[in-house]
Length: 68
Image 1 (cartoon, helix red, strand yellow):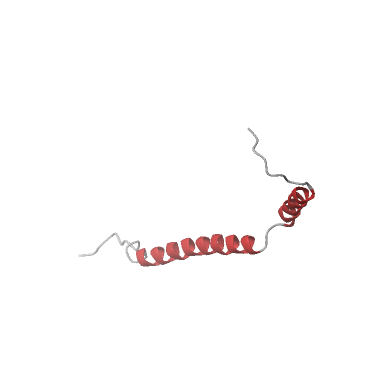
Image 2 (tube, rainbow, N blue to C red):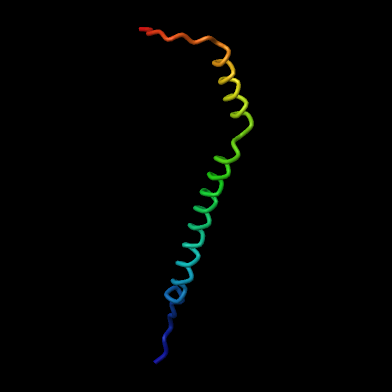
């Protein structure tokens, strides 16, 4: 008896699983590495803005008072 159909998808299931896990791990590692990079090296515009704000508050004399 000869079979007319042959299903290759069952044999490739482990390959698809490995490729899927690899792509998920790749995107996750890119996200984690870029997050760590931007924490350690912030953008220059935000650094300039934060230093300008800290300089403005340092120039003003602050008195202890309660404001409503």
